[in-house]
Length: 145
Image (tube, rainbow, N blue to C red):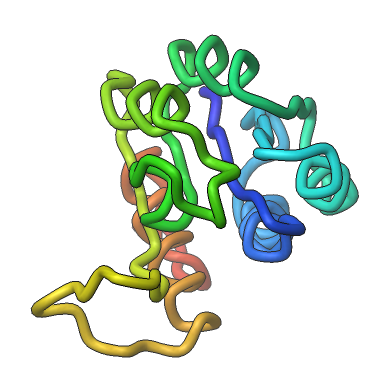
């Protein structure tokens, strides 16, 4: 099972996601981080990812083998992240056969209707529980009976 975490602009969201994945999932789950730049990738690697790469070609190729892709909603919006996420990256992520779990973080010029403003820590918890469910694992803190 391969989970790809995508982030850019420093990688702080991705760092938090990777940290929570490592705390909550079995160690045999491969976590691959893809940054729009080397700084974002490096920050996510520090959180315990197995592998990481940066840039358009790395994203385009790596998302093809992902089982789950996690990141902010801007990961599927061309030219987002102040232009760091290219149209090629957005298309590759959006058309990947992987299950996508996208956090509805605010984005200039886009309003998401029907999405409530939830603090980031709560979004992280929902993300982890959705991944655990997708992997067939019990909810965190509960034993499988």
